[in-house]
Image (tube, rainbow, N blue to C red; front, side, top):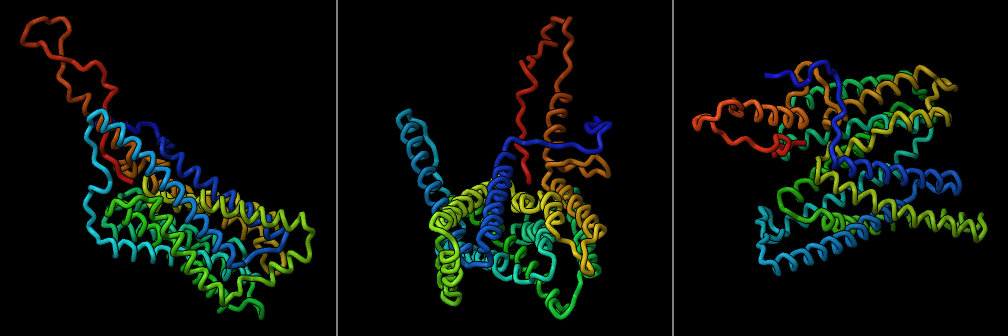
Length: 411
């Protein structure tokens, strides 16, 4: 076998569809910026309104994009029928599950989305005496839990480079938790019990987030349901669940009244506008989330949740995070920064955005499988003597070797 990876240790494997995870990353970042502005300028955070707006954004984004996509496909189908070209619509595909089961799964995916979002926005921020970046630093849990669901529920394989990535991510997460116990100061305001509860809630957030992505992947891939339709129904179910839950929270009317009374009319109008922008960003973010999950896998989607962690941790340190014994600790920060970089790199290796060329870790990647298939095709072509004009040696040679397409695709 020809050594394809000669003199290379690492390679960035760009694929055209990576534009969707990148846009997911952009929309997630923009939504985070809006939440920071609302928190700093209006002291508006830890509100169930964020969850209501998130589900409204999901519902409208899914509804609009589903109907746009459907009208586009109907138009294409009409044109193809006029040209007497037979095509098969999505409705003609057999669904292994009943419609009731599919709706049941979508309802639970909306419920899991509600649980993880309400924990992340309402409950975890209440532990103000602990590091505010801990949830981001434990983002690698997303990839591990999604991979386990991917393997045990969807019955899809995990290759050598992916197992290696999960192992390194797991080791880094253990180091992060150990250093947190070493540097985190516990007292009457933050007991060990409170600190353990916060870590447990973070695990639940990432667990339900991964379960949501796995259910969506199952519904879309195995039942051929349109992913924007799934998003629309998730938004509807999630909004109803959140609306019912909000009666116990009184919709934070007192917090809204305080913002209205303490700010001028123009500032309050800006506040309402920022909430609307937050709704739009939630819709865009979740639209690209389901597209990324459809084209790639839940693990690719989870990578976008923590790939910018090194940047976020640096900003958090500048703003006063990573405090130990009453002052900022540079060792505390550097350990977590290095762990976040390694976790991000390993997440990229798992998703084959970065390919490592040692210990056979490159063998099962899409990039190298495609190269080997093209190379083996060329090597198996018969050798022809261009000088010999005899009929026995007269063999047709393809015009180009470059038009080979590999149909071997795996996440």
